[in-house]
Length: 383
Ligand code: V47
Image 1: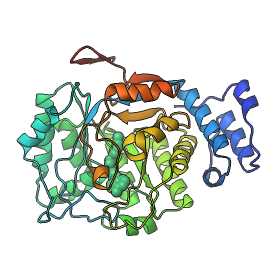
Image 2 (image 1 turned 45 degrees about the horizontal axis):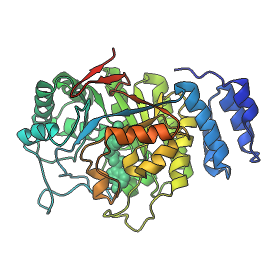
Image 3 (image 1 turned 90 degrees about the vertical axis):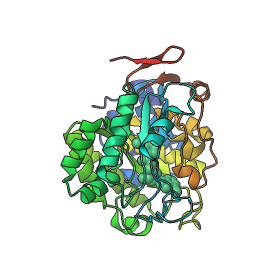
Image 4 (image 1 turned 45 degrees about the vertical axis):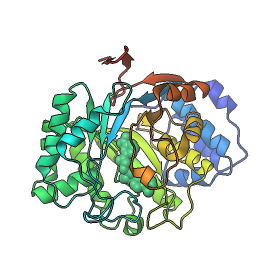
């Protein structure tokens, strides 16, 4: 994807009193790449409106007024997890109260329940279960494909793949290939957190490190599995860590082109070992979207995830760099265990209203950003 420069009118409209932003604005408006120092300046600028203006200019250059959403269902097959990450309120040791693991039949039937309209995507992520065999996950996917052949399966983070590979004594490449053959169509972006070791040791000590996450993504992209990329912010990281994280994603994207969407995830401290930390503020959430849009010039999409930042902030984000507001999301567990007070699902009509009132044009997409057209109880995808 190449960036073209913005129109003369846009150039003329930009104004800021922040001297540090002037050269950055020049680069953005000429379609030039930003560097590490530029990233820091964007985080530190007192002129959030100017930062947002620039991000919005890029967003409109790429997508005009279109705002994407999808209708998906989250399936979290197990919350049993060996990792015990401090950032997480979802994982349980297997003998702890509240630990659960779905039988395959249960996972397949839960996939069909609770939704008023046909979903186009299953989003599947879960804990690192010490006993479930790799075959369980392959069967889970095969069974879903058999029962719902029209639904895209976006499943398993890089962290889950690396763990399954280790337990099955397979290479990462072989593990990914078997998942793909079973019916995995693409991969979610979770588990990336913040790549810097110092931060990872504090928030998710036993997870694969940043380099391993990126290497697993590289291998997935190489066999044709596209993926998303996330960044968990608002805990113990600093601006340098955030910029470093995004520039490492950008470098891999230059190489593979396999990332579809960047999703900043706001940290929810409730019920985690980091409960003493404050929650993120609205302007922090908005600025993160804008900086992501400006640094990740080779990512087509920036997603604001309303479950994490509230529908109200997500709506504002659509004017500060985001072009995607995620989905109707039936049954989200991970952030709700961590104290998110947002509703568990929004109806399609609610999303459309948020988008329209932000002055954008709603576009229902499938996972690969193709148009979805609906009739009463089914959908077709433009190919
Ligand atoms: O990696 C866990 C985050 C992620 C907390 O690709 C938390 O479309 C905040 O993969 N507070 C998993 N965040 C979720 C994930 C995802 C989510 C939405 C969209 C997509 C996509 C992928 O959830 C984890 C971690 O970063 N998380 N605990 C918490 N307490």
